[in-house]
Amino acid sequence: MAATEAVKKAIWLKGLVAELSLVQLELIIRCDRQSVIHLIKNQRFHEHTKHIDVIFHFIRDVIEDGDIKVEKVITDNNVADMLTKTVLLAKFAHYKDLAGIGGKKVMHQLIDKEEPNDQDPSGSQTKKCINQIFDEMFEDQVRRGKENRSGHEIKEGKKVMHQLIDKKETNDQDPSGSQTKKCINQIFDEMFEDLDNSSIKSCIIFKVNVRLRESNPDAYTPKMVSIGPYHKKNPQLGPMEKYKLLYLQRLRKEGLDVKSCITYLEHLKEEALKCYDDIEDLDTDGSHEFCKMLLLDGCFVVEFIRECSEIYPKGEEKIISFVDYKYNQILRDLLLLENQLPFFILDWLHLITMQDDDELSLEELSITMFSRVVNLGYILTCDEYHLKRCRIYASDMKHLLQVVHGVSCQRNFKICSNDDIKWNKVMPNATELSEAGVSFAKVSNMTSLFDIKFENGLMTMPSLHVVDSTEILLRNLIAYEQQSIDLEYLYFSDYATFMDHLINSNKDVKLLRRKGIIKSWIGDDKEVARIFNKMRNGVRSYSTFYYHEQYTSISAL
Image (cartoon, rainbow, N blue to C red; front, side, top):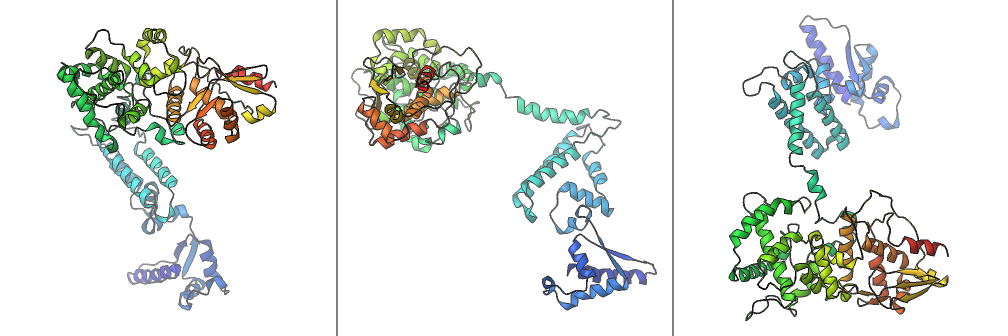
């Protein structure tokens, strides 16, 4: 039908040309559909053509008389497409060339205009502007997706167009194409400007990666108070801001100079910023927002820890007491990886606000506070000697979560090799081991959560108290290990891997519970099994796997 309309117009144009006394021996109609050409030349009736009205069949007579000739044209050379379809800009220029109405030559004259001026002698700004125009056109095509064109085709077109625009055409003014290269280099120089490899290495307060987060996002998200920049703009945590101000107000009454603090924090700001991953939507220039956050959040943490150790001004009440419903939630939030301040900020605020020279150090106060609420069994045995020994490593403290991690682990020297070989072994679960003759027993004198041994068919393990906060604490300690680059042993990650192999179902939990190895306060055994089976998602173990010997001994059974 479309071909018939084209022929009708062709006949009219042929008549017009004849009236102008011009001779045209043969008129050619080009069609990109081979099936249409066959249909025009074939007089047979076909069931697929019964919907075509008889009036459209006159084209066959015209073709048979030889007045007009129909030829096949490949799609790439079908000039009519630029008027009837949405096409890529590069193809549009090609069609214009075929039609003899401009095309690449005109476009190059527009893009690579060689008329220098005082403000832009190289024409680089003109090129940049046109690049932006075409980028907007391509993005619009991607959004609309007309004629079922895929985003891939449009991106390819964009790539071709940039090659066309940035094509190195030598000329008298710029024989080497250096101006074009300079423009591109300037763009990337701006991108590289704020890139600092040292900031990547010094990051200690991470955003939890997607693989760890996806199985339980709530385990890494504060519910009561925001500490640091990552969750600062969460409106649900807004009510706690007034408590931060109350703690700061109390410190001001005791002599804290807020202005001097902000001034000093400005000197520490760059070092503090490097402790975080990319911080979005936080004004760190000019308005002191980042430093005000460090002061408010830091004073809140320091004073809250002091109150937990019964250190607060005489004659005043605690701002947040033990019986307050917020207390346990705050303790939970202070042990989240994404909810931390650099320890050197907290330690400095603690030192300048001390009212008693005999007051314990901040790391000792922190360990004492968390030992009351972290029900993993290992901190509960911390004695005065252990606390004093922690002071030796105060300079290595990174944040509160790392303090808990440090006193939980027997040793953790800085990594001394780049061995990145993954540990990928399998082990029978507790039920299968029991059926194979292995016995289980609880460690009598527990010194560490990780003190698991297997000798002569007997597996001894420390007791683990599973409470509401257990999964959250373990997950955040694991996230810290998985994203740190300076740890030799990943104690909690390897413990989670070992327990995931040991526990496959509620039957395994029941067996360990009867032996006193697991003490659950959260409900049925299925829930405990679920915690350990999901906790290991996204966790990687390496060749330094802490339970290598135990695996080897069990494999020898």
